[in-house]
Image 1 (cartoon, rainbow, N blue to C red):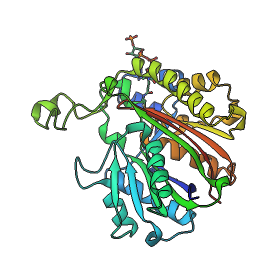
Image 2: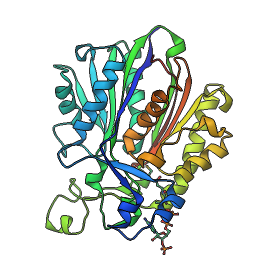
Image 3: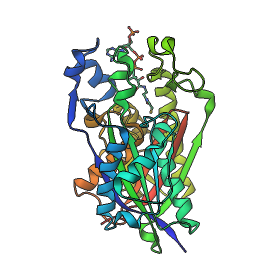
Length: 331
Ligand code: COA
């Protein structure tokens, strides 16, 4: 039997740290409001010369190295992003692949917003179990700062840039395998999180630009309520489907959008504080990069051992959501 295993994890954090106090200077907000309502203290922004593929390349390079592989060993590259280098084409995955020295191998992007990494895991698992590929590089990468309206205080304080990457490899050892991945979507709520301008619905023109429609818009309150309910249901579903309890999990790693959402979901599901991984305070919401960056934070803190059971859970624009159970397969 072939299983898929998370062989490595890595991330890239851009250099420029933006504090809540920095944002106080450009938008009508306060450190107190941001901290109390979101738990975010800092986030990192890529510099003007960097595009999403550059962040993806740094994280991807480290993930390949940590998997003990060379670029030529990678059979497929998939990038999840809502902030691609270019609208339409070429894909960010093609550019990152080229930067990484991965030649003549398939590469493509997916757009499932903050649920990106869970969708990537489901694709990698399916390709590997079908016997099509042996080593797949999956990357969640975002330069969301390029999509933020710094006149809109309800969104611009929430997000940050970054990238997280992982090599998913074939294995025969069930003790280091991805156990289960569950993904879903409901387009009924597609207006909750949206970048309305510059796509085929509202092609780029002066009106679109003058109205700031190229930036992220969010129905924060409605999204918040749905996020808590959906994330909690989703965790419950995947645990029951695999006959597991919260106490079987080493780390619960939810999407990092808001500390209040994470705490509410954690409490509803009876996770202990030390099981729940929180990075939203440092990085803000880095969308598709949020979960791999959070896994990497426990990896780099040397808290993650081979075989540890991780429960991942995400929710984002689309709306999309998903969860994954996996035994870490890295060293
Ligand atoms: N600084 C100061 N005040 C702000 C502010 C900011 N950055 N952003 C909003 N406010 C104000 C609002 O204008 C509003 O003022 P009013 O009562 O005078 O109208 C007040 O704060 C409350 O706004 P509201 O939107 O109801 O706040 P909230 O408690 O829902 O928190 C979010 C806002 C965005 C932090 C919260 O809704 C959230 O986290 N939503 C979900 C985010 C999410 O999960 N997103 C993506 C999934 S990937």
